[in-house]
Amino acid sequence: MAEELWIEAKFRDDTVLVRSDAQGRAVPGRGGLVDFCYKPGGKVYRSHADKFTVTGGTPKALPAGEPAPARGGRSASRSKTGGPPVRVGKGVVLVGMAGRRPESESIQIWTDGACSGNPGPAGSGVHYSAGGEVREVSEYLGQGTNNIAELTAMLRGLEMVPDPSVPVDLMSDSDYGLKVVTGQYKAKKNKELIAEVQAALSRFTDIQLVKVPGHAGVPGNERADELARLAIERRANWRS
Image 1 (spheres, rainbow, N blue to C red):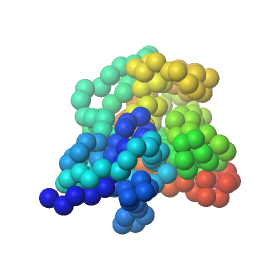
Image 2: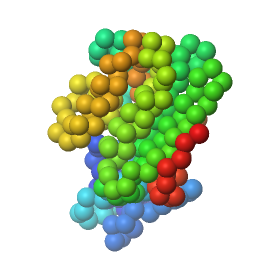
Image 3: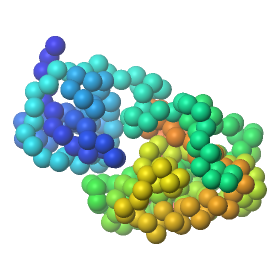
Image 4: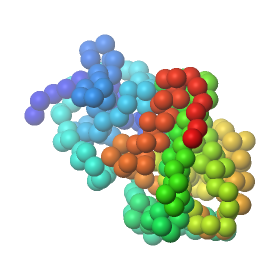
């Protein structure tokens, strides 16, 4: 198999290998996306360059991996999207994509965060849909981290729901965000922001937190990601 140069980098909460040049710089490919994998010779995924922080070291020549499916399949964040629901609080359930309810049965909130560098200029995006009504938020956060952007997007989405007694599905591709707000990860940073999200969740009587695969062509997730990136590009807030 052909050999390519790869270098270690941080992607969300994981250490991954990104395709690089001889100087250790990530090399954007088709559509400006960077190839990455979780292990030598593993399946190759693609994501935006600002999702990665190169951690140093020397580029290594490794076997090229098999391209990952463009849609569906294993997600770029590696977390399973199936499995049984997990009740994490009164009225709060954590589910995979298979457990997401249709819009006719719940308010649908898609959230995502972006960061140009980590830390760096950060933005949050929310795509809200309920009974044909669509509302969106694109919020510039200034200097921050990807985790702060993800958590802020979740908080803004929850704040948009006028009646906490109606069924709500909140979608996020952030393994970190979902697990710290549900107590499955012990928070070391961002404790005040996490507490705000948890307080917002406590208002609801029927809410599902849905783990979705990131950068897998899921329309709501892609739109929330676009809104987060627009906030960074424009250095401005916008909502509809």
